[in-house]
Amino acid sequence: MRLDIITAVPELLESFFQNSIVKRAQDKQLAEIHLHNLHDYGIGKYKQIDDYPFGGGAGMVLMIEPIAQIIRQLQAERTYDEIIYTAPDGGRFDQKTANKLSLAGNIIILCGHYKGVDERIRETFITREISIGDYVLSGGELAAAVISDAIIRLLPGVLGDETSALTDSFQDNLLAPPVYTRPSEWEGQPVPPVLLSGHDAKIQDWRYEQSVERTRERRPDLLGGE
Ligand code: ADE
Image (cartoon, rainbow, N blue to C red):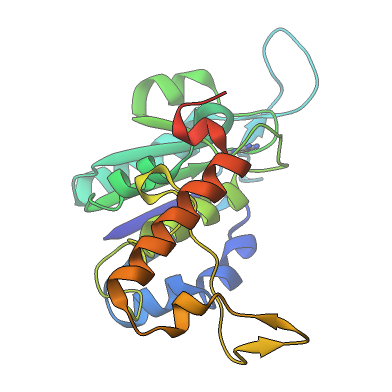
């Protein structure tokens, strides 16, 4: 998978991509991440990337030309399966979307900033608009990091234990069951005995029941409830 991320603040993402699971994926050559600094494509002597909104109002709007130039340059080099824009008015990001995006080959993520981007960018280039939750961030970079992490950890070979992404919370719309490690008893609190039984089928049944119970208690909406 190749991810091209367009941002006005690449510094915000550099350390993330050099330290996280995403770094491991890059070292194993399972993912390639390229950060593109919008300022390198700015207009004129001052490398302008944003301007006042037509009609007035607060905040600056990212201009069309620098973004269009990067996207067109990238598209001339390869085909992209998705061009994502991160914004609070996008569709809500969830595990289902992460699963789907993890099957893509090449993805561009355009990080929103300031008051947004000129609407014509969205209309012309963007195939998917994503919000990571009902709150407003100061920029789309954190959202791009969240989306990249959620997608890349699903690529085969990225996680040490091949099955671990399949047992995550939200796969099958269930939260993950509780987990325990040594010691088997701590300050009078024992680990559920079934986990020490060595009986694999019973353990799987118990985990499934715990997942359903936990989901019913904490996130009934995932089970189709209220
Ligand atoms: N940019 C600002 N807020 C955002 C959000 N909630 N999700 C994605 N991008 C954003």
